[in-house]
Image 1: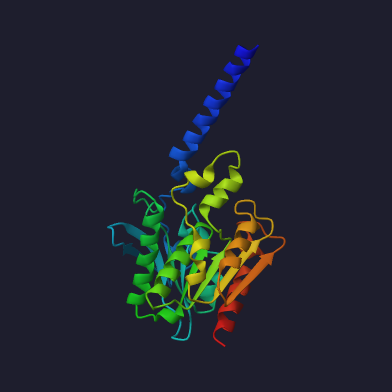
Image 2 (image 1 turned 30 degrees about the vertical axis):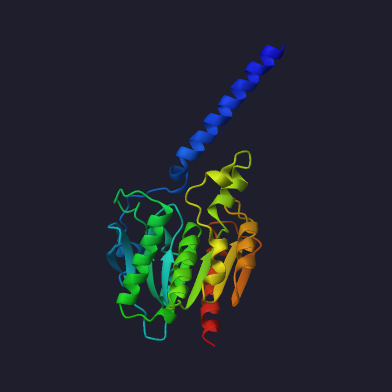
Amino acid sequence: MTGWLSGVLLVVLAVYAAMVAFLYFGQRRLMYHPDPTVPVPADYGYSSFHPVWLETKDGARVYAWWKPPADASKPVLIYYHGNAGHIGDRADKIRGYVNAGYGLLLQTYRYNAGTDQQPSEAGLYEDGRAGLSFVTGQGIPQDRIVLYGESLGSGIAVKIAADQAQAGTPVGAVVLEAPYDSIAKVAQSHYWYTPALWLVRDRFDSAAIVSTVGAPLLVVHGERDRVIPVSHAKTLFKAAAEPKKLVLIDQAAHNDLYDHGMSGIVSAFLENRKR
């Protein structure tokens, strides 16, 4: 009997080790979901947008849509989207900002739009910097730039904002839609039966740096979010410095915040920031 139990235990341990190895070596395939689509703005009702290709400092190419602000008083949002889909999938989300006359750079990442480039945390930060460089190159002052991060993109927005503040050129505001404290901690909450916290390579540890963003911060999260549980957003918000605002929407999950008034929440935050 003892030998039988030992055999079973060895099989269980082998299966567990294989599962952990699969999660470790396949983690980037789980985290990033390439989409080869190169969406044309006019196909989504945005003839005022210009498709552009951004060049990163490490030689990657990033696809984006660009629309200048209606006038010099309007903010310009740099939109860093989530890990899946393409920028055309966000067309309905940005409609309120377009109608308000805001400028917008809606950018994707190096692994999308058919570029076949490999994603990584460092690489996505470079993609985010390329977007900021493009917008400032259009003559937009830093204090009118709003870094908007959706889900995975929230870590990029936090990192770029923190870097800009450290350089003495802070952005005007940061808006985070369904953010996390760190990807590693989110992974641990989903894969609680593994040592995921120590296995994640692209950690996106926003909570460690969010206190240094040097700009007004808005965090919006759904109470029913099962992708990034709301506890992660609360931890991130607690670590942030003032001025900051947290909006929790009781009926919202991860992908439906715009069905529950997100556009109005963001616009009100940006308008009040100016007063």
